[in-house]
Image (cartoon, rainbow, N blue to C red; front, side):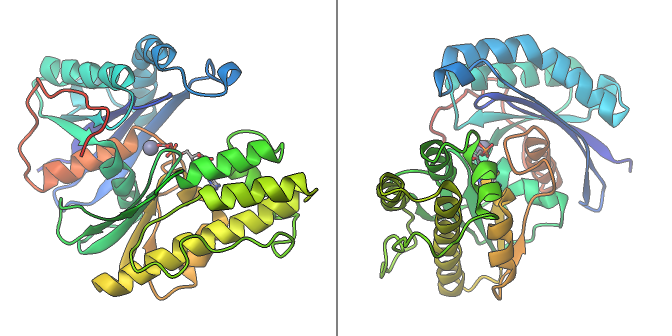
Length: 328
Ligand code: KG4
Ligand code: ZN
């Protein structure tokens, strides 16, 4: 039979993302398009304004979907299934993409899948290699630091999460403190190449813990003190990046050994970090990362999650599926 084309939509926060993925009968997938509109209106407020985010999604989504179809060289009639994020995220923002996706699915009379944003982040790595459970999944973004065990396809067991800030949030806050700009992740990463990682001593968070939790507030406080004591921004960046990377990798490695897993999927915005990728590559784990442009929020990752649901034979979602701020 012919390949199926899946449209994926993510409007969970301040990015309007639409992607198209091709699913072959064998289960292999190919990203055909990935278009993102990153909202600029929030910059002057120093944080995302939920109501403005919803309005921007409404204004942009048609255009972004058109651009995605054009990039894939398709017309909307070629689409064989639609997936849209139903949560977690900002409810008003989520509703835009969710309702839009349902409308497209209904108009085309094709299956609709409500997708979990974190499952989308994990399936972003399916662009690189077929994900075969069991594996561990570390989702590290601006809003999440979640470590899951995936014992079988579609089953997610939370192994550990952050007690305070998300990993990306720590990168963003420390970058702001050091005057390195926004988003903080890439800014820290770039400054770190010019800094001394031994300049600022950071203590490993939660040292000696038996579990697999994360915490970044201690590193943030230590960074603030070092900054006040006159540490150079690039030294702060290099020292913090190394400490954060070591902590993430060490905790994941302990969990992998405890759960007997040999593969880890690392995804979310922070998974774009080069030092993190290098540190995972130096372990005995097989680490899988999303392809370029698929780490931060996007629509293709939601299409990839939809493709996996379709291939696994999961039933489509009901068209009255709601948006959820805190999806389980
Ligand atoms: O996945 P994402 O777009 O948004 C959420 O769902 O939260 O992730 C954005 C986060 C930001 O905090 C950003 O600073 C971080 O990912 N980030 C990075 C890098 N690129 C983006 N952190 C570290 N190193 C990077 N290269
Ligand atoms: Zn995200």
